[in-house]
Length: 117
Image (cartoon, rainbow, N blue to C red; front, side, top):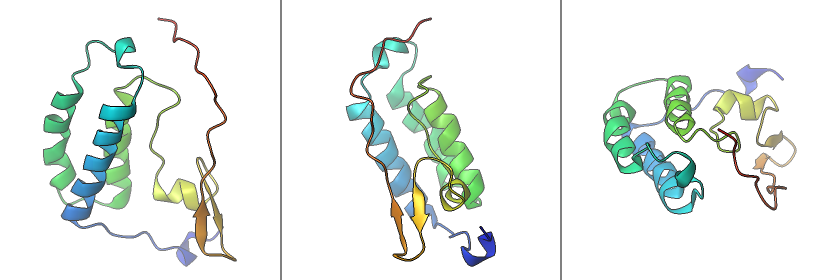
């Protein structure tokens, strides 16, 4: 796929902060495995990452920042995929050019086994 047909969007600082706040909140209230990372203070993560989210950066740099943040959960089923990965067919969605929309899959994992340390 030719990425020139899909220019990388530029996010404002407000858009980056709003998206980060939604991501942080989703994890805070819906991540079921905080007991597997007892040393992680998710409230502190918000304080730590917010100054970096506000800084001017490319979309790729922003996604890498979000990926580093989510990696602190140490969960292989939780992740952030960048714009280029979604446009080129990487996880977690595909691009349907005929309908000009992203198709997001529904999770097929009815239950998760407990992580081995």
